[in-house]
Image (cartoon, rainbow, N blue to C red; front, side):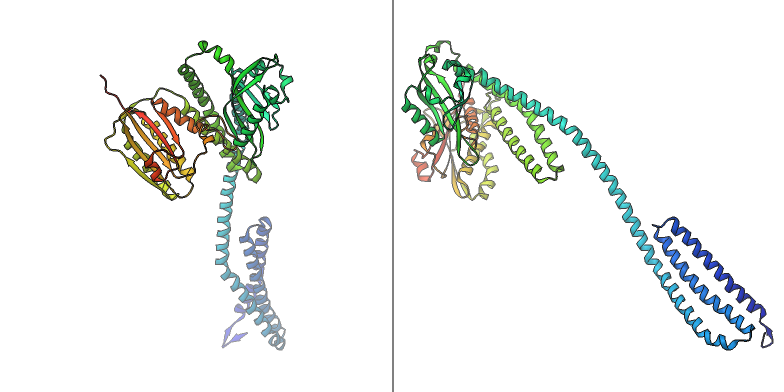
Length: 514
């Protein structure tokens, strides 16, 4: 074993031993990485290293076995056999080397994938933590919400009881009837007036107590035709055959489809009233007591309604069921309506107002600065005819502004889209009053509805109450003023302008102290 006189035994020995050790180390690496992969099967890095070691082991086996076979065949003097299999051994080495190279180049991408998976896993963990926190918060809310809602419902029931007490203790006659006129319920005053037991008058026709049948037919026809009757005079015959003259205000009740399903009413015994006028309190005193009662009711309603509105909004965000959401929206709508009525009750209350000198024209200009953009959107043209050098009035500016704002907004709503609105201010020297006129070319108001425009009682379930106009009239009277409505107007200037309805507000000027 000489090559150009140099012994090669040591080289062959090192090559033989190195090939054997390569096989041993590659197999050991494969076994070790297999153990790591089995220990943590979800770790992609161990899987990658295992398959890389497998490829290296195949390469080591192919190359090392080829070298070892070469020396065996040479020492056994079978070089011709080696020459036949040598090309196959070299080809196998090349294939395995290519596989190892591909796996090696793939490591960079494998590292990026692992980092991406790690980031996604971290984000998922953070999301899971946030979801657990949100779940705990919602669970805590659900635990407390039922108790809080029960408390608010209990509060509303107390308010309902107060209204019930008012119904039971009222000296006026209050009754409820179905569409045929059969009595469904009545307060004790009406039962005592009829001089009968309650169980005897329930389901009994109201027509039974009318002395004249034609009065009943007129009452029923007018009520269902117009939907409302105010100060209807009728003669009633009670159980002891006594005749009484009654003054009745009644309103029909309709369902969502507009079909009349009954009516309710309030009656006053004019016979008893005329004989007891001397014992009645002065009208101003009665009005103030009613005002204070309205203010107390408004204060009691305010907090429970606000709480229910808040909790309804919270529930609406959390619920997924569409029917539940729609139900909550319906509750929210009714609560908002109650809040509006509560505000109107508060405005109706005649508390002492802080009065200061107020310029009517400046107050109107401030209101129009807010309303004109809204009127423009509805394509409503507003014209102002403000008299200069108007005297000042003693007023609460906030309340006066609200009067103007509500009347202008009422005109906007009645006109719909398109129309024109007129505002005038004048000084009436004969009465020393400032006259404010607000009118529009919207629909005229029928005569039968004019008389009930400022009545606080409901016209129907659909129309709700007229507390808004009633409250405005109360605020005007609180300033020592008055208001009239003409539809159509009588003033030639207003007629020439094309108005179909005009509200005239009269407020006295500040009088000089003598």
